[in-house]
Amino acid sequence: MKQLHKQPSLNHRREEEMGSSETSPYSPKSIKHTRSLPRSINYLLREQRLLFILVGILIGSTFFIIQPTLSRLGPPESHNFLPRSGLTRLSGPHTGRVPVGITGRRPRIVVTGGAGFVGSHLVDKLIARGDDVIVIDNFFTGRKENLVHLFGNPRFELIRHDVVEPILLEVDQIYHLACPASPTNVMGTLNMLGLAKRIGARFLLTSTSEVYGDPLEHPQKETYWGNVNPIGERSCYDEGKRTAETLAMDYHRGAGVESSSCLLEETIASLHCTNFAQIAANQIVEDGTTISCPILNLGCSCLWVNLLNNYRNSHITYRIAHLSVFFLSPPSVRDITVSDFDVRIARIFNTYGPRMCLDDGRVVSNFVAQAIRKQPLTVYGDGKQTRSFQYVSDLVNGLVALMESEHVGPFNLGNPGEFTMLELAEVVKETIDSSATIEYKPNTADDPHMRKPDISKAKELLNWEPKVPLREGLPLMVNDFRNRILNEDEGKGMK
Ligand SMILES: O=c1ccn([C@@H]2O[C@H](COP(=O)(O)OP(=O)(O)O[C@H]3OC[C@@H](O)[C@H](O)[C@H]3O)[C@@H](O)[C@H]2O)c(=O)[nH]1
Image (cartoon, rainbow, N blue to C red):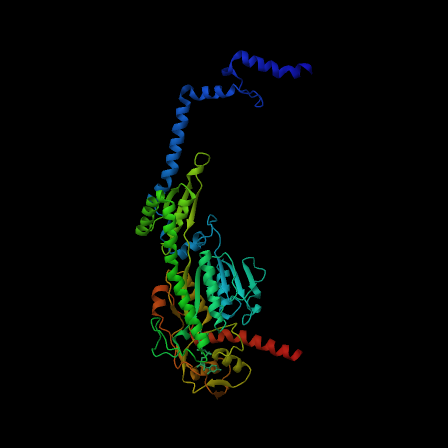
């Protein structure tokens, strides 16, 4: 035992005697000496080892600096030339100012009014294609029954909230459907626009054909400014939506101005980076390629984000190589997508389908419910006023196409098939009960005499048009109405 304890000191002495160059490679690491430093330097200097190490670092540095440039010169990444929507589907969402190192994340989407008739169908479509969906609804007109089949789905969340109050969420897109028919509608739109701008999300406003009022132009194009009575019974709704459109467009125009002013401040702070960033940004505008750029400091990367914000309508991805950590580890390279705050406006024409409120007073729901309940169909006025009725799935497809397009709008989303209310009553009779009778009632004030969308703009720019004619769509809502009316009657019977 004694001998064993003495062994290290013997070894130690022997090493000293033999000189450092003959140290056994198997010596325990714990034995360290102050003289090992000169030995290491000695080791490095011999046989030009230091030179080899320096050349290695140089080659490595050169590779990491020019690699992004080479990748830009090489075959283009397929998504560079896809519209932004295509990119969303392929490589995750455009998350704006939200840190985007998280690639492959599913788009997160808010639908305000998502428990309502149109909203719930939209939510179904988004969930079906794999998005994460958050519904905000105050349940004034929306119903949990419209979404109950999604409860328990991990990609679905439901928040009871009135958009008149602000809310903060991190999402990529906001479909704003919530719309109390009153001036508070404007507050809700303002809140959601503010949220979209703050988090760099895309905002879609569901406006209405009511912005055309009692139109003097027929069919109505998006360029028509409308004929609305500002003090009439309908004006709360009509003018509310017109104001919402105004706000959305103001935000749309204002966004560009703001990012320019930020840019100016950043430019003063990081002047040495400006030329480089500006050259790169110009290149993005010219050829739309992915820009890769080594960034030297945080200020400069902010400058980049602001610079590229100016070009938010073209899809831009760029990479940051953190050279500050370059000699410690390979540069961390990540893709960053520029803020995607922008606005889309849809003008929705009369829409029908399953999940419509039974008693919202609209003509299709009234007629269908009345025919099922064996009540007379109430025709207001002489019944010669016209409307164009679109099936809800067509509308939902149009909303998604618009959200993912590069066009702000406004776009008319409606079915150009035009019917008088008497003709509609006939279709309902054919579909549900041919023996149904008609009862005439006085019409409401300022009721538009005719309405029909001109959808050439949506056809051309969104590649969208409705597919379901009234005679095909109406039967699709009858079963839903029958079941709900039956349940309602049973509920009453049990009381
Ligand atoms: O029982 C009824 C109900 C309504 N009507 C008539 O049917 C026509 C359509 O009335 P609706 O209430 O269904 O719909 P409106 O066209 O007035 O407004 C609608 O249009 C566009 C949407 O964006 C609006 O949300 C919606 O209110 C009106 O002329 C109305 O007087 C009837 O003849 N009988």
